[in-house]
Length: 116
Length: 109
Image (cartoon, rainbow over all chains, first blue to last red; front, side, top):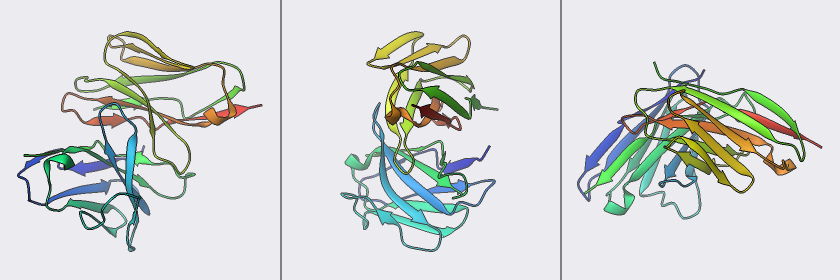
């Protein structure tokens, strides 16, 4: 099946620093990538949707200047948490879709961010 | 390697019961999640099992057997709105989520 990877798997940073998370589709071209935030035992909260080569579409309440998303190629999207604060600590999950299989999304393993 | 298996597609009748199975082989185990995802929407959390046994939540129940690497999601009194993809995911020893490919459930009147 299709494989999506994320890097790093976990990161600890100081408050005020920026953190970049990569999401890669390893064996297919992802025309669309999604970024989610997961809270313990809760549904995944969609943060933004990005299409290769165009600007990301952010969900209501998500600050686009704080969560910078770049989908520069068909296999890579990055999420940069700028000026991170402790409340940004969370589990960030990406998913990718090739756009060919009735919107099937393939999920990455997640990145655990802890801001001190 | 790590692997999650679940059926690709299942069909059931409105009002009936359906069981969606999930088997897993992972490096360590820190719980198993079931999510429901309607097309074009974010996955919705259904259940989290970390101990063996059955957990019931309304029309939905989830079962876990850690020794067998096996879980199932049981949906009762099926409604048309239950037509969706159901995702099984296991959190491994590194607290990474290993995802199944999802089971597309089709409900017929």
